[in-house]
Image 1 (cartoon, helix red, strand yellow):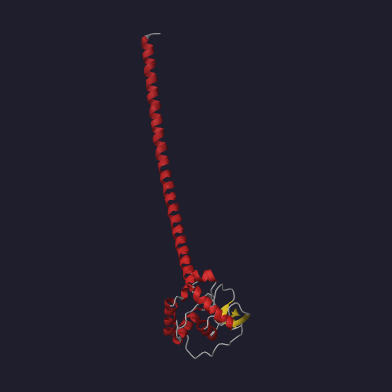
Image 2: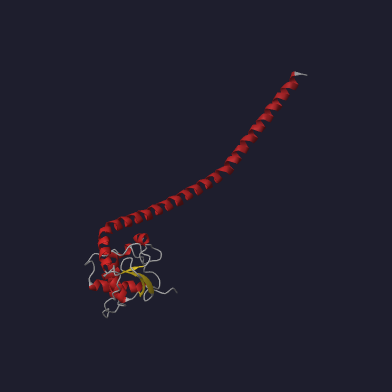
Length: 222
């Protein structure tokens, strides 16, 4: 064959190779453009999952810190609690009726407001839950009574003295006053530890204010 034929053949091969190269380049560009949005979406989803996980971990650490702090406070109460238990044992499990309750308007808004303030300043909230959505860490640890729902005027089981015989009582004014002033007289059944209240921590007027606030928390489910 002539040299002219071979020259035309080489030119055709070179042209074909150039076309193939352009096709491959165009295909790579299209694939890259299609893959890039998917990659961006995947990255955004991964970052969103990571942010949610960090939020959950942070909330868990905060809850655990609150429980640890509450348990540490309970450990500090141990000495005083043991002394109160000894006094309770001296009662020999004998029932002592509470004293008569003085007449007071427990629906007075100012009295309720004062009681709410005392409930915080006297750290009652660390053990006694008053909001269904907000647990009391120390209360969860020792199974302390919660002031949630319809509880006022209802019966409950208590131990007469620490770990004494069980008896039913009514959660009324007389029971509340005795529970604060003589916390070892009756201990709620199921509680892992009796309430520890230092002598003189609250006076008579403060007890009435606390009682007004706690009674106001008792509500029937609508």
